[in-house]
Image 1 (cartoon, rainbow, N blue to C red):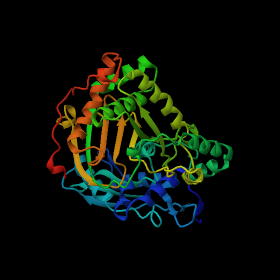
Image 2: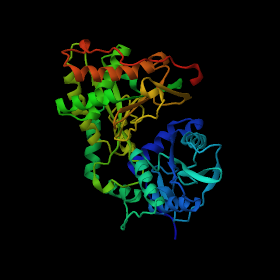
Image 3: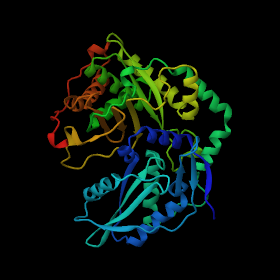
Image 4: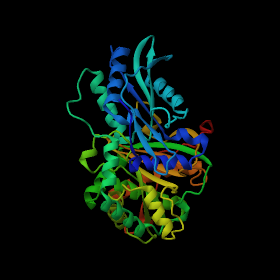
Length: 439
């Protein structure tokens, strides 16, 4: 069989253009990690066979990309059985496997010449314990990662995935290009919406050190749900609105532009597609100090829903049209403030985790963009993960920011303040100082 060549999807195109904006030493920033614990008694051959079945099932795991033409191409190779290396770890804990995944992710995946993943079977005392994977963002987004994990666990447990073909990126790419009227209307929507952005939140080559912190809060989750039910809006918009109000408070601002990460999986045909469908849907949140907080949250919900519904577009077409219209900031990728709602995937922290009553710090990193990246996941609690540049939000404010979001949610749930000034921003938990070891 010969490889299949087709245009890339809109999501793949966005990732490719983002890679072009990144420096040579930032090309590995598109790597995502996954660690799957293997059931006791699973053999290496069984784990290898399960992963091999997924590579056969999902073309994104057999695809390379030609970035040389003006319109990049995806090239799907025929399936060949997978052989995975074994890596012996000093212990069988998940932390050891996660450390291995982080090390593997440091090396760039050459998407033009190799498939967009690498995987090994991690063993301890010769016994297979984990499948450790690195997957490029061209092949997966958060939804695709969750799907792969579910399918792998089914296969390695001896189950089956059912008959029938699954949707593939080539099918999506061709369908997107066939809907010419929809493509034109989406670009026209953004041409009208492409104004009023906060200049501070446009990406401007901020390469300062990124500080990384996380918070998990069942109090914040319960508060977000109560606010959502009271106002009749989504939990996602409640969390985004509270995040904006906390940012206004700490930075003394009245407006901010968030590049929402659109999942673009509203069409059930693509629910089980393994690919990257993420694109940016920018939206400005504005509120002066006399604004009613509930009005801000409702406006965030209405505007955010509209933006996300227009989140699938050809980045190249939009940039061309914005340039022709004379917009001063025509690049659809150059935003420095991201908000990514990951969905209902948050898990309670392990006993003894600093997330139980404080903020957890991670090792800092040098990155080119964005300067502020807030990821939110829901579950029994709300999990917030923040990566912020020193220029955008200094380390002493990064942890304070996360607990301020928690406080804003709790304050809005317990009362209905008339103005932003009346919101109680007092932290509900301790805020540890940024550790020097994170440098």
